[in-house]
Structures are given as structure tokens and as C-alpha cells.
Length: 73
Image (tube, rainbow, N blue to C red; front, side):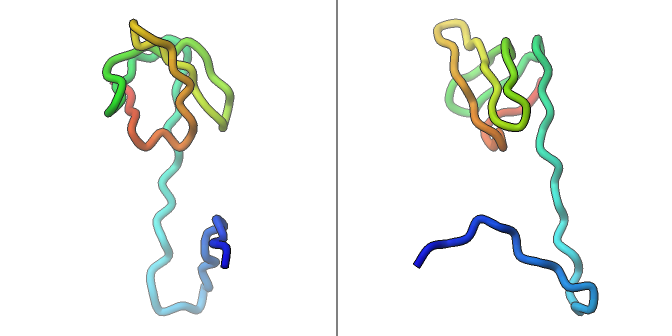
């Protein structure tokens, strides 16, 4: 049995509230960021909708979207 990655459909006639959709974070080249594992860094490259390349000083890492462990400072 495989699990589908597609979100469940909301029916307008449902008695429950519609799920809240959180927009993905947007980063720009030069943004200073913090990552839960790698620490402080600066965005040096962007692959729109796919990943960002961040320079953490000791290493450069390609962080994949949706950036759950990374936030902009």
C-alpha cells in the first residue's frame, strides 16, 4: 500500500472548517537564515520551488523545499 502525497480535497458542503494552507517561505539571494542543524548562514543560490543553496561558513548546503528547519532572520 502506497501513501499518496496529494492533499485531501475539501468539500464546500462539509460541516468542518476548511484546512489552513500555509504558503511556503520565500528566500532571496543574500538573506541571512538560521537552520536547526547547520546554524547561521547566508543564501547564495536559489532553485525556485525546489531548493536553496546556503553558505554556513564551514560548508555550503543545498536545503530542499519546504524548508521546515530553516527560517529567515
